[in-house]
Length: 381
Image 1 (cartoon, rainbow, N blue to C red):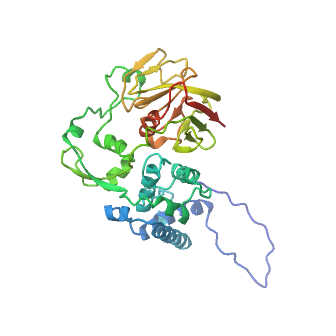
Image 2: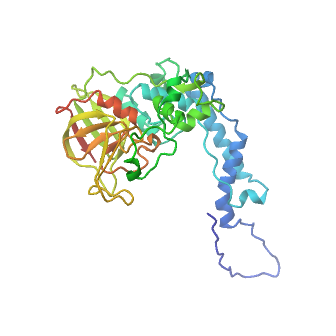
Image 3: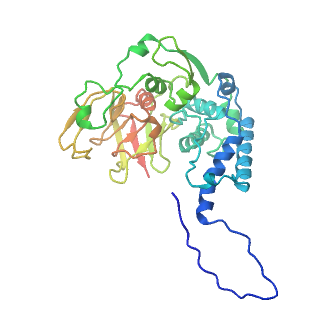
């Protein structure tokens, strides 16, 4: 947005013997719009990241820190020497979109394998990755921090497995049911027989716990509609051991995370979560898990909240793009549950209607560990 500042007139004394000229000061509008231009210029001076299979699987903390330093130095240099082109400071320059980093891709995969979920694997720095790092320190008794340091990287990189792997699209992948133009209105969704994925990239991104943009960035020339196409995908590893049961779940509203503990009070996993909203807050206190259901239908009741112009009860069909995703963990407080989502990249970035929203894959993994009528769920402010 352009801004205009009004400069107040300055009154002063003029001396006949000498005249002093103040250094020119750029108008506030120019100063405000120089930052995006400087950022764009800085981005242009830093080489695009190597997102090859070898670069991701071999990424390390030291190289990542060097790239961060180079970006900071380039941004500083651009700010000190803004572009001479007046158009660059016109306010029309948008902040450049961040590039995925090979180290962050590898680290996010390793955090996911360690059951300190970063949500979607997108190769970008952000709040859910910070939370996953902090939870990893909780899981492993390390000094609490939300940024990668050498101690954390040493512990994470003990897993020497490849972070990304090759995958070949199958005919079954191509022939699955897809709905490209999926409506958002609940009444129209209720008319469908399934709330399926929109296309192959969305389905595969979810299968491999990835952000769809990252999947496409790693495979820019891929034909996703053709069986036999080889892709580079994340390898998040297996779900938590289903033999280890969850005795207690803590929904921490201040941290935006779900924590699960076994019968020995040991933390076994941490997942980012969307927890209610100011209009429809999540419950408080303690309750129990009633049970879980995969691929649930969704019972819409306008008494709970109103979606669009829908004033009547509706039953929406099952599917990963339904309002509760493809997993529902029912809680003993009526109408409340822990469930999946049709938008995994929005976890803890948007509000929910009072329930606890996880990525579909985290919700499915948790459902295998809970114990009906036994697992306790505590909501913590």
